[in-house]
Length: 485
View 1 (cartoon, rainbow, N blue to C red):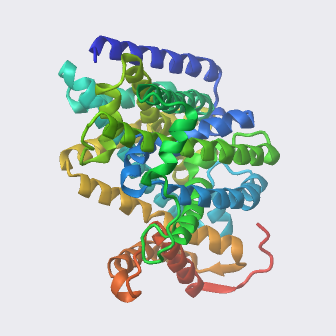
View 2 (cartoon, rainbow, N blue to C red):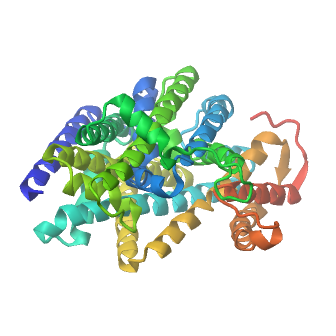
């Protein structure tokens, strides 16, 4: 593909992004940076959150994975709906009642400063690794299809990528992110829909024939009822529910957008419509995955060993120029949709949870916010370079999965705080939270011998949260009936 055309696409995309940033960051204050002055329209937040929740991993990995696991991923998506119901009815009312900017402030009010700092630390660790991994994955694809042709080294392309994110987020923060996420979601979903239509045209299929071809293939299998299988329905469903709770409801990145809505009622409407769009979006990604595999058979193209490469290879090498352009706009949007909001949420959490931001004057606040925003940009840059130096997919995936273990302590902390009225010996809370992921990891390794062949999947998160919950119970004090948080 012509490098000049790709360069033009980058220019076009960032022109739109910077225009949005210009208008949303006018006269922006620190309050706008952190919560958009609670003025975001709920429907804009709902649509924009799709881009952040899907990210580049979903954009290129879910379609490719259909060849290995069919539509079984949809079992997790169904579980999301239960998780978002819990978020809308339990967590959102709590956050709005306490008027939180950083959601981890709740842990300070409920348990004390050690639990508070521990919860925020686990979020920072998870989000740094997770966001770096997602950006690395998409940046690697962009490097192969574009930057290598211009002889631009990987570290230079990543540097400019993060620099651009910093430029359009440093002033407006979450106020800008809410609106740029909407544009990015539009490009991502449009890319999927248009790619589906192009493949249908290439294979001379109308909607009815395409639907019949997908459902008659093995790719459309959804439900698995073998309890020993890692993709057993109940495991996937409840894993999906708890993944939604911890990676949205207990995640500063996702909740910060929700907390920019005017009131609780708008935030709950946002969650409801977000679920509707998310369900539709995942059906699109799975359908695309089935069609990509069927199209690969149609043109007698071998499926790549790394299935993440299936969509990029077909889009760039086998579709029309228009199809390639659509894919590139989608993957560019995917690259930035999670990284920009992550940078803002990391800045928010660190400023408020560790630097006593709210006690500073306006000049100190602005200076501190800019420095922290720059700091996390640099950290993400270097973590991505480490991933690139490792250059081992299994090791990088292991690091990414390890980051997922850090959500277990957050699940345990919040559930113990909400479901019980016990106090705890706060200074021991960090020990419990650091031991829990280690125990969960050990149990996961030996699960088949301990539990008669049972293998953990995503539900290891539940075990992690349960161990944290039980640990907090062991360091609990008598009930405190005065707690009404």
